[in-house]
Every structure is written in structure tokens, then in C-alpha cells.
Length: 357
Image (cartoon, rainbow, N blue to C red; front, side, top):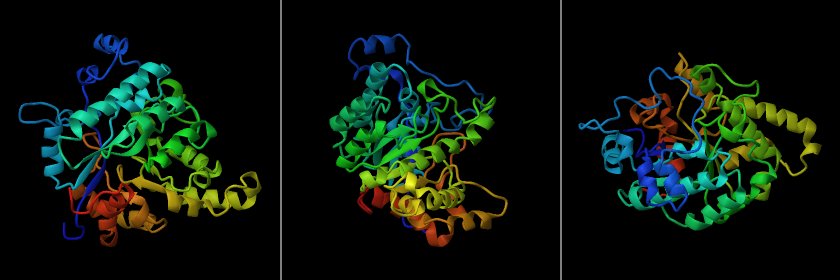
């Protein structure tokens, strides 16, 4: 702990049981969920170690992430976290459901559970606000409904999508997010589900290994779209957070985008400076799953190729199988960057009081 002052975890996945949503649902959605139907599922790829860690259980055998008290004890207390941002995983799949009204109702109920049952439990909790992006009117209405709640620190979208995020279809969401001073974050996990179409440009992978390895392809597509469609020129205060995509792909992607822009800038006249400069000012990434080259110096070299001190934020992805705990992750970063990555950048982005958990 000597090389950084505190820790903010920007990606924690609470497990919210279906029965906790029922209280916040109106009919006919309550009856439908009580009957066992959640609309969309997954592609069914097999992970031999399981999506969630098998050891994330209490002494009584209950899942840690399903209870706000247990999560605070076993994660926030254990690792001395100043804050932890709750990102409900189930809403990522709901966000690409073709059934807009039911999915929106479940996502709204999830936001209510966070408001009434999670955020009041511990002052260190913050949360992402889930919205149904495939109907921007519904998404904007949800932002307007709960976006002023101090516990919500960003708008939460899946990286799985049927359109690149920068297209004008989504601009009302960005306008509302900017109006409420909320960053927009995207998170993987639903690629290939529902409305999102094939999870890769080449189609459907045949294994979890293949699917999981290629998830950064969605991020490259969305980030290219956000820059070239002029989103950050139209919404100059908007911040865009790329959760759980790794970091090593970013520098060569930006080199390619800058080079192409220099030759083709007439096709995007609203992009009035190098795309890499726009990304530096508006885009942040989370660390997990941090790349682990055999030679740690190679990762350090990658971190020197972009403004990691102001663009990179620590995340555990708890309780998922490939999560990175603070003691492990901090060792991967150069000492000069640790405080920025582990704490300060997230503190600034989300407007969190320093030293006042």
C-alpha cells in the first residue's frame, strides 16, 4: 500500500436475485418474472471454471455478491476499498432483448433495488444506471427518473449492440447523460445475444475461449464510431468509459485511426484534430482483465504509449472467474502510475470526495 493512497474499484458485479425485483415491478411484468421468465439468456458457451469464482461464498455457503453486507465485508473491507462501483451483469443481456417494454421494466427495477437496498447499506457503494439503449426514449426517461440520485455515477450500456454507439440513433442518450453530468460506460458480456447480432465481424465463435478473447472487437468498433461520428464534438463534456476490455489494443488502434484520419479527414469534417487527442480527452478504460505478458516490461511499455495516468482506472470484476484483486493488479503497474490508476483518476471522473468514504 506504500505506493498508492487508496483504492477505487470501478467494476463490481452484484448478484440481484429475481425475487428482489418483484417489489419494484408493476403488472404484467411482476407475474411474468414470478413465473420464471427473464426474456433473454446467454449463448451457452461453457466456461470450465464457471463465470463466478467458486470461493466467493460466506461461511454459511451463501454467494458473497448477492448480499450488500457480505460484499462490503469480503471485498470492500478485506481490500480496504474507498469506493466500489456496482455494475449489475444481468442488465447487459436485458439491454439487447427484443422485448423493449419488459426489458426496460426489469432494468428499471434493478435500478430501484440498487437505490433502496444496496446504496443505503454502505457509503462506499456507488452504482451504474442501467438503461435500455435500443429505445433511446426509454433510456432518456430512465436517466431523467433516477439520474439525479447521488449514488449513480454513470450510465451503463452493453458493448453488445446492433449499431455502433456513435450513430445518431443513440445521441439522445448522450445528451441526457451530459445533462446529468454522467459518463457513459460500456461493458462486455452480451455479444451475440438478442438484438446484438454475431459477436464478431466473422460470425459466431465455437467456444468460450474464442468468444471471450475477441470481445475487444466490439470496443474498437464503438470507439471508432464515437470519434468519427463526432459525438465528442457534439457533446464536449461527455466522458466514455470502456469497462473490461483490456488496454494493449488501444495504442496501435489509435495509430491506425490517426493515420487514416489524416488521409480521409474530408469524410468527417467535424473531427477537427487527431482522433488520439479526442480519445485522450474523453475516453477512459478499466484495468481488468489486465494483460499479463511474460515480460512485465512489455506491459509497462504499452502504458507509456497512451496517457495511462489519466485514462486508466482499477477494476476487480469481482466475483468473476478472471478478476484481478488489488494486491495482484497494483504490482503490474509502474510505481509512478499506481496512485493514479488505483484511485485518483476514478475519484476525479466520478466526483468522489477524497478520503471521505
